[in-house]
Amino acid sequence: MRHARLRTGPFLLAAVLVTSACDPAGLPEPIGLTGGWATAGCEFAREPRSVTVGGQTMPVTPPELAAAMARIEQGGREEYADSYAGLEVDQRLVHAVVYRVPSAAFDDFIRNSADNTCILVRDAAHPLAELTEWQERVVADLDAWAAQDVAITTVGARHDGAGVEVGTPDVARTRSALLSRYGRTAPLIFVEQGPVTPLSAPPPRPPGPPTAPPAGG
Image (cartoon, rainbow, N blue to C red; front, side, top):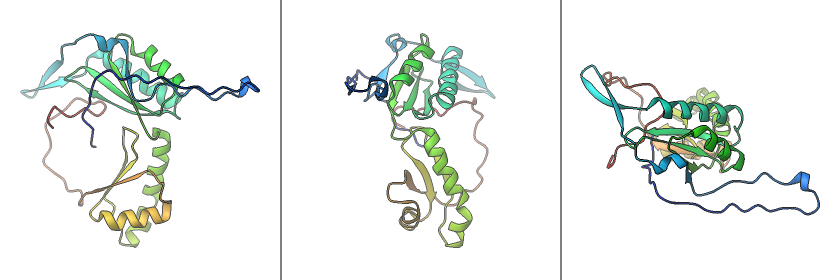
């Protein structure tokens, strides 16, 4: 899965709440901050940790950061499914990135769940729950697409909430066919990808969420 290189810096935009004088009980939920923000733990520098496996040294996620990520992921999936999109970890810079559709309530949950760890929060276009439904819909139609000679090699919801990534050797044909069926606004991202073939086993890596690419990668 592709990951955008992270940029850390001060970014804070004020949320705007439109109120109604007639029906306070019917006020919309505040949308929260947009443009991204960081938890208080990001003010402190942290040394990356590593482990040696099979003679190879690789970075690992500190237990306290892993625990905070687990709390945020569980809460996001169970309580804030209309906002939570996914997360990734940058083991070199010792922080996690949470992608969510802006939500004041989920932002508060992230702050409380982070403890003293560094969590960067980024805007997402779609929550994971929505993208999962789209992913399942495309997967359910794979046989029908194959019968129409529309080759699809991979289907997966992106953890940054950008959309469902559809891998295909013929991007133009697949895009035209799928958007004709699902609608032009379907959150589908088409990438060129040939048939999946087995490769030699990669070096072992610790389990966990997606990791950010190294600088320059």
